[in-house]
Amino acid sequence: MHTAAPEPTDAAPKTLHFGVFEVTAPQVGGTYSWPHPRSSSIDFLDPQHWIRIARVLEDTGFDFLFFADGYGYPMIDGDVDPVAVEKGINFSGVDPAFVIPILAQHTDTLGFVVTQSTGLDHPAQMARRFSTLDHLTGGRIGWNIVTGASQNAVADLFGHTEMVAHDTRYAMAAEYVELACRFWEQAWDDDARVADRESGLYARRDGIHRIVYDGEHYRSRGYFGAPPSPQRTPVLFQAGTSPAGRAFAANHAECVFVQATTPARTGAAVADIRRLAAEAGRDPQALKLMAGLTVFVADTEEQARAYEAEFDAMQTDEIVASLYAGNTGIDLLALDPDRTLHQVLDAGGPIGQMGTSNIDRFLGDDAPTVREILDQLRGRGTRGFRIVGDAAQVADQIESLIADTDLDGFLIEPVFPPSDLEDFGRLVMPILRERGRLRDSEAGSTLRARITERPGNDRLGAGHPVLVRDRVAP
Image 1: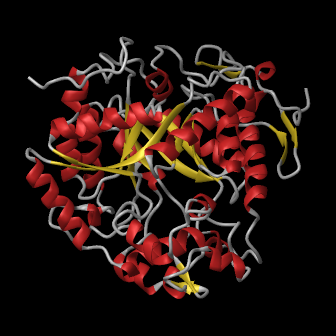
Image 2: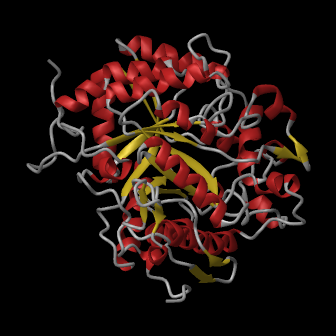
């Protein structure tokens, strides 16, 4: 029997939520691990690789499998970074949305979250795709809302003459989400689709409504053809810790992926997002805030630390710099290693349009040197917190992070998938369940019901801020 970690108060322990952060690409997190014998992530083109992972997650109690996605890639001096190509650092990948229907056929309760940028197509196109996925999964789909990544590469790929300014992307995203939610929530009455064979009536005309939207960036005056799905609106996820990102999350997201730097900084970001949500008239505790977590766990602490050491030995400065350039547009290896990132500002560099959260964290009065940034990010990339140990040690550290940050859970960022996911599910999840950290039973059949822990809570809700804007005609 495992020894329960002491609770800080007599209150019931917070129920935690767990997802897995993945990509349909060689490896996760901008780090280098696919050649390791424990990893089969290089098999990302094989559906059986994903079926194995999905079954592990469902069997051990995870809430969802989260797919990051994007069209960008690391660039150096206006061209693709050779290191990114040679090592598979955020380069090469396929569309994860097409994998999800396959996995839905092999699972019953596991949710699926997929990333879709708000700036590359019209909300009507995206809304129909997610309605389709929600139908095919039986209401188990979530949308990770991003305003873009690797914007320099995306601008080149799509033939744009310049990158869209950071804050403008968030203004566009607000309209994009609002219009998409109008399609999902207001285009069809609940009883509009009849599908009656005897009468031959498919749908009631008076139950189908034209969506009229007149925004600065997006407009529509039409009918949404996709019938309402079990959730109608997918669960709204959002990742972004910049000031604009926090404000967007507070007004739009149901689940927020918070950048994990230090417990103190992450806790401050969590508190700020909850404060902003309250100011927007939302219940701040209703938002589920999660962070990335890399876990090295084994039957013994010694073996876990051996796995960590093997992973760390594979990382180099070149890998760190490739990932950072793809996220921020800044080539760390081209800078003076003994000076801070302020040297880029002083030279009028690209700071402000890409990866602002990953830049701002290294500015300020206590800014580290470029050499220190390289050392700090080696083996971390875009990963969040890192914990190492045997099962009980890892469970203790998870609970400690929750106490220090007020997070609601974590997205496990695998290093050697699916081996380390199987280890986490086999070793750590049972301890967390013993300690009352995981729900005792299924909260419902949809992803929203599971995330909110409220059976039957399948819909976004008419009071959500995206449905009360004034850019829509009555």
